Image (tube, rainbow, N blue to C red):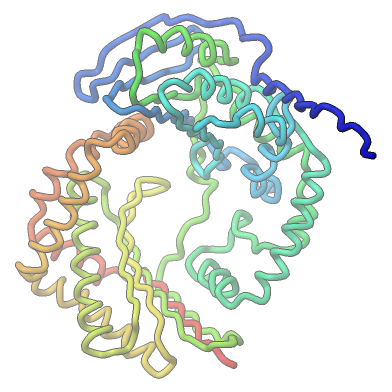
Length: 450
């Protein structure tokens, strides 16, 4: 005899949590104009927020909100808290939703988003399919207006940080990074080494307060939306979720460039020996010079990197056989100052470290004296131009170009292609000469020892 089976009960699925039970009071558009250069529609909203819309033929949407300030406007004494400002606020979930509930609310969605308080800017970035734009804007509104705390999550983070620091102390490359930072920069309260004391100094409530301050004024932000959109359909959603954010046009901010660490001047040399299981020698050599940022100088810098990488690969790796990987990177920064840097980075053995470095620097001297070869110039230009052509019709390109224009008032990205063609061998020679003549150098060599 068997007991009759009970009918199988189908479990009832919980409905997905709502991101917003009630929509905020919408703002409105007070000014609208079209920019022919970028093909964008620009809006000024009643709360002071600036919105830039660029419609493309894609099926996705990218969103960036950017505002000047970042951690430069947070006091040096808050270093431990500013160091945790990107990690802690998202841990507790969002508004009324725990992390688990938020995950369920976004189940099946392609929406991605994150906030970042950088050195000079704070931002919100996100992406989604064209059909999910309202959901992304709701997430933006909630992230700007709420911080949900979770003390248990904070305590787990602290323990994770303590474990990570213990691992870092045993990691030779972490020790090398600390040595490099100390050698390259003047002592500064914003350059403290990771430590258990630093973790213990973090005040969770204060971190969330500092985070909220950076996103408190929508009038200080420019909201850029690029992708497959119907602008007329989007306008009411922009007013609903961006126009409703708190904003005060009279309380605009600028980043404090003087708050940032600066690179040392003069010649800096540090050689260290660090215990390793598999000993290797790592060499970093950096040169710093003054140089104004323009589309042409940026293109010259990129071409110089390609020329030097080819020369160093051919000489240090193939002819000398002293390293498997050598990297030469050069860049021009706009903030905190217009500066040109060129950095060599390679691994070798202790006996070859200094001779290979001298050889690498002599190759830069060769370019400074004679300029790049026509063949090297041709290959480098073709490679960089192909990269540019592949990139220029993407939403990512337009987002970067518009963001650059908003942050720096620069149209340089629009002229990258023509700038690459305008750069001459003489331009590269002059830039190499400027670097060779600079007395601001950093040499750090780490020798591994068993």
